[in-house]
Amino acid sequence: MVRLHEGFRPVSTRADEQIRADIVEVGRRLYARGFVASNDGNISARLDDRRLVTTPKSVSKGFMTPDMMVVVDLDGRKVSGDRDASSELLMHLEVYHQRPDVKAVVHAHPPLATGFAVAGVPLDRAVLAEVVTTLGSIPIAGYGTPSTPELPAAVRQYIRVHDGLLLANHGALTVGPDVYGAYYKMETVEHFARISLVARLLGGERLLSQEEVVRLQNLRGRYGIASPAAICLDDVLTSASTSEEDATCQVVRAPDAPGARLVADPSSGVAAGGRVAPRPSTDPDAEIRLTYRELTSLIEDAIRSLK
Ligand SMILES: [Zn+2]
Figure 1 (tube, rainbow, N blue to C red):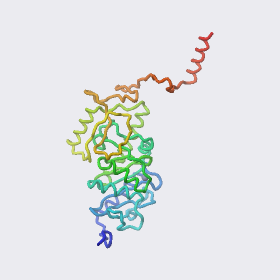
Figure 2: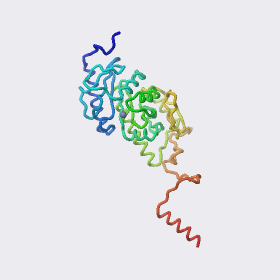
Figure 3: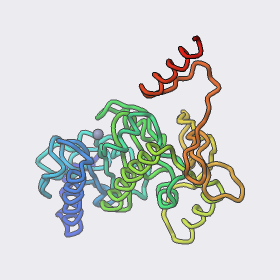
Figure 4: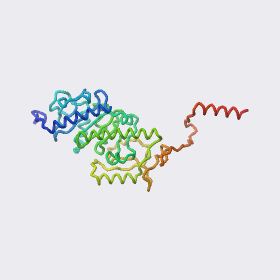
């Protein structure tokens, strides 16, 4: 039997060279934006229906040159290149096997999105119209030891229906129709994480209602926005649970509020108008916070009432 990689040494075409140049530039941007530190992260792209090009192992993505890239076949066997392929090649191969439409994969550790991945908080709330129409939601794939088959197994559960994933206690993964398309999705994931964090620090998000999400889903069709799966709605806002089943749609959490577009997140105490509403606790064991001045005044009042 003739094995694919034996004697298979195609001449590098202009298109191949452009893809290598794009990977070098995207590596620079990932590093410059702090989406990776040291030698973290990896980028790959399809050259044709038999070959991929990937970033090399143990190199800072901010300082790569086109000749460092490694060409492999779809089974991960090296076709050409002086270096070893990315240590996360198995995860990239899994994506290409599951998604024939995907032409490029970017993996990085952007700090805000990775913070959500570490906290176990998926970016799946209906908050920003642009995120709903493009990525839908960004779930968290379960933890897998980096560079082992555990990571592709975790990614497999979601990648058929999502273009962006968080990787539990690790980082993020995005895919696209070309190298820049995959990279821009990584920018969107990190931008969304930053906005979500700020909104939560300010008391919590106001959410798009289910009606509004349906309207946005319809815009996908009207503007020809490519998406691997439809949005399915869920109003269980506090649930971060991940099912063992493979995902079949992009679960977006949005409140059911007929006639409304923006709705207060009932778990945050933010009113729809944006004002943070105090929520008196009925739990006798709940924690409260007092300033030193408030505590002193309470003690003084209690002493006074004893006199
Ligand atoms: Zn990583």
